Image (cartoon, one colour):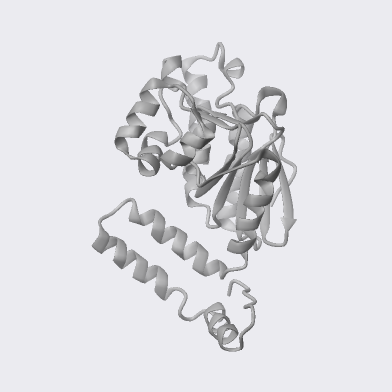
Length: 264
């Protein structure tokens, strides 16, 4: 896995935890073409080989912004073809991010507008600093969300709340985001990363095949009916029966010790 991205900072903070930081603080971590290319490559690499990464934390550089959305200065003057070319890169990044096997926790350290809020929604779940703000501002700019917000937002907050939030384009507070279901927890800014790390450690201590298979099955639950979803769950479940981790989990329980999972 590369670590020398131009717009991302990668930190393997512990053996099984990777922190991905959107790293354009001079532009409020806004997304330009290079960030799209970097994210696309990162998620593709993680899809192919997790290198024993069992949980990812996604955050932004600095204290004010997680991600201000698309870099409108970068987009100013783009032709239709250039705009669509850039967006196609982000489309691939979004689709690959959806399929990344390890869970992705958002640690939202500040403003998340436009595509920034869409990144929050693409995370498996998210914690936010108390001063964070969220908005889907695209309709105020003559466009609409294009990084899956029309799909992910209703799943998080319900269709009626999603329509109001998206069509108004107005921001909400961290507390409102928590109440609606965009966030799972609101933290004091100086505690945000530690809260995210605590949860990441707990996830990383569990059997990684179990976590990956459960994530796939949970995602499928939002795309199909309960009976077919259950059939998918059973296929995911049976993947774990012949694993060494299943034997280790049962053995550790009976020996009254913590299990040591190896992802095998």
